[in-house]
View 1 (cartoon, rainbow, N blue to C red):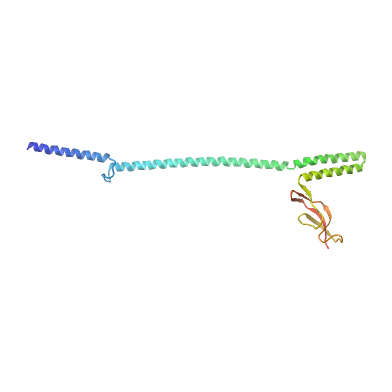
View 2: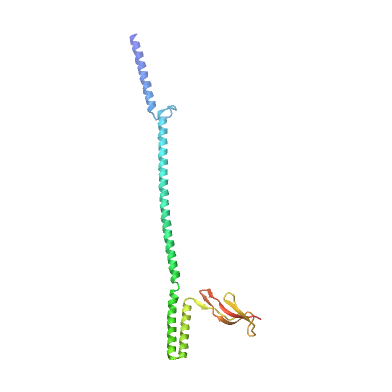
Length: 206
């Protein structure tokens, strides 16, 4: 009898030990199929997942911040470069405007010097024929300068063209047709296709 009781007690102890072991396994396990909603492994996995998501979000935010900072610095550098470029170009244009006439003035100075010398020589020698020849040579030199700069004299033969001629007066002339140029009061010039001064003319009106 005593032996049977001892066996039953031993069996109960074994069952309690098994239950305790199973309970400990359940608390430490990582499975989802055999565990209930309150399983410790399930809660632990959720916490780990949340931590991973938070870490990923933080890393993404930091990366975005770094990229924004890089873009900002790049924009500021390019803006500074553009401002410097604009200032440099403005300075160059100002210098160009200031000295744009230097080339043509330098060419005219030689003819101007020759004209002064001719006048002085004529004044001393009273040789007005020599002065006339000297002036004619200087006029020819000035025409060459104008030609080299792309300046051409406007034609004044034929009818008056408002694009090139400025009629300052009208006359009736039997020798000319209606709207034809009678005489030139001031010559006009074109520079590289652009009218820089129209010719001032008298036009025939019947």
